[in-house]
Length: 234
Image 1 (tube, rainbow, N blue to C red):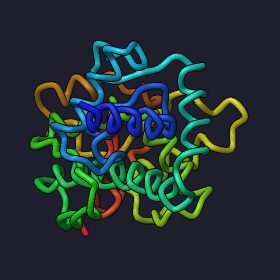
Image 2 (cartoon, one colour):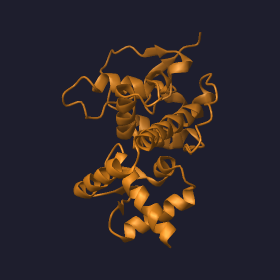
Image 3 (cartoon, rainbow, N blue to C red):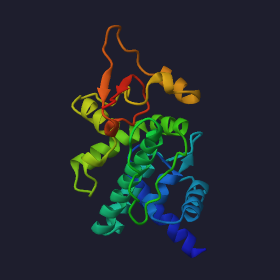
Image 4 (tube, rainbow, N blue to C red):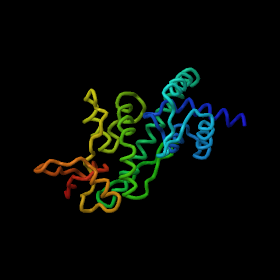
């Protein structure tokens, strides 16, 4: 029992580095470098103590004051090398999960299989094109933050290694003083080839002004959850 409490206490501290107000159990697993079952057990213990709450989308959130307290404990308790490793694992989680989502476009473009994630990181696998589109949509804000952190700090996660929409969106949004608003990721397979929920996702993209020419992109740079591009046939 003491070991369970100790594990939950450490996860409480680690959750303070979450990049957005909510974090999924999958991301928390990579953040902690534990087995998914142990991470879920620790999250449930924190929820029972009212330190976190799980929302309808499966994200665990904390009150801003609770998170501030967790961050204070994180800095006081965890050695610098452990703090850096935790941030790096979280960034690697989003990077490799995004690469897995990108790989679902293999039916449309020549995309190499993503490399295996580092030890302790359990990347999410979407399993289908529809799921990949949904994953990108649900993680748009946290991917923006992840690329921002990767670009601004030395965490061993190079900006050039991120899928194209993650880098492109960050470059379009980062210079703006109020650049936290959504921007459509208009990169992906032709709309005529998208079916099911993926087509519904594409239909929700910001409208393109009449007369705007479709962009042409190379297979290696297409992976986002928005349609509107014409893939290169070269």
